[in-house]
Length: 619
Image 1 (cartoon, rainbow, N blue to C red):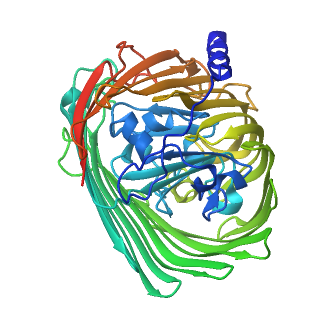
Image 2: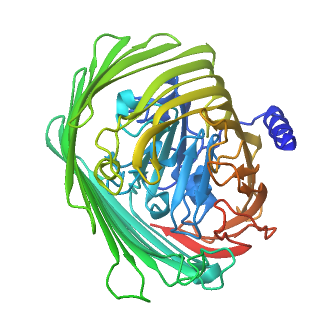
Image 3: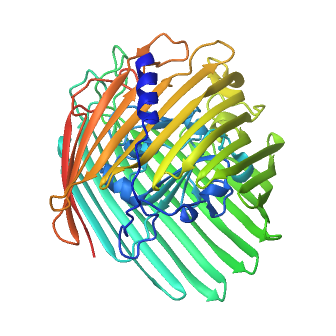
């Protein structure tokens, strides 16, 4: 779709004069990045696993703060992520349904997702990936997305990138309530306190909706319900030594449609799935002169049950996956310019299903990264060794650099290798193969960037390519094998900034060509063109805020053989918010204003025009 390319180029090249920064505190005492942060305070952890100013990394990283999440509105995380370049999503139905996130064309399971530093992969799932449909925005304080392979710092699963989610740490009490289309209700609250030597924050939320039919031609709505809670705290045991702990629990139920008798074709059914996710970490952190150390133990547990009430009230299939992880990481300042990041970890995973006995695996790793940070020059390189008790050892290399050409203007480039260990299901489940090798990737990108996303002004253009090998597929009727090779290459462009005082805009465009190198076919559900743009205006009328977003995707294919075509589409959302008092704000939005009919997964329904309204408060 050539018009998309032209539209993206026009919008991204028309950079107007950008006004001064107008940063204000988002929330008294809340530890989130401001909407217009100074460049030297924009911090990320996805580059090296340690807190790092964004300008010191040569990798392609986007950071989204809490105030932008609130401006987008609603519990659906994909609406926030789709603002970023290189990101597309696919969902099998309404809110809460199976949701895949494709970063630069990589498979969804090749994206590592962490919440408060805890890895969130479902080790009992066939692909081992995390279902983004179970992660809602209510408790999120910040998002960081690294695009590109980065297994040196993060190990297995980081072939396509890393999504790091940080929960909110408010300095008081906050709450929000929203109601809208399809009898949808979302409530969220958070509270936090802290002082010399201690901190404590809790958050929770509840979401329910009657939903839409997962089967696009169906009439029976498929609903979703979830409640979730998080807690995080810390206590200073002695000078420089802290005890830290985080925890998260989510309980979800989602209806879906299946293939009922006698035709066994896709149709309305009364089937549903329950998911219980628990995760947490406890550890010690030490900060001394020129040295930081952190060590701890983390747990992630996911249990799913599938029900078909037409046959029985008990589950007809269940899965259970659990991982324990012990880790130690540190940073040593070798001199004013050189820094050494290092770490070691060991992970024990196990899974079982109704039809598969319990199986276990162990993966131990160690890595080191050496960084040079001089006057306007930043270079980092490192190596990682992973040892799996089934497929043996694997080395991973990576390097990146950034050079500041002028104030705020820098060239950056990165090279990274990625790998993903076979999942326990692929090794021991139905069709399992213990001879599988890990999936691997080699990726590089290069670009030029002005400023930072969310700052005074920001403009970035990046070229990228990733080659993947030993991709694991299920080959009927034999089972899982290393069969495929793939390549994803393209360009990303992004522009954000203040158009005039009180009026801020953004635009992002991505061209991504993702193909199976053995067949020459496009990878499924990977549109080549993706364009997002929008504006936010704070009016002179009682600080009323108005916003609008446009999301445009080109067509793609739903299957590996490229037989089923998914048409392109354009969606418009309008938003508004009005402060009633200093503590209370009303907000509302209309999604899919044009009531467009579209699909991101063939045969599965999507929302038409939908309106929502609510209020949020903070004390």
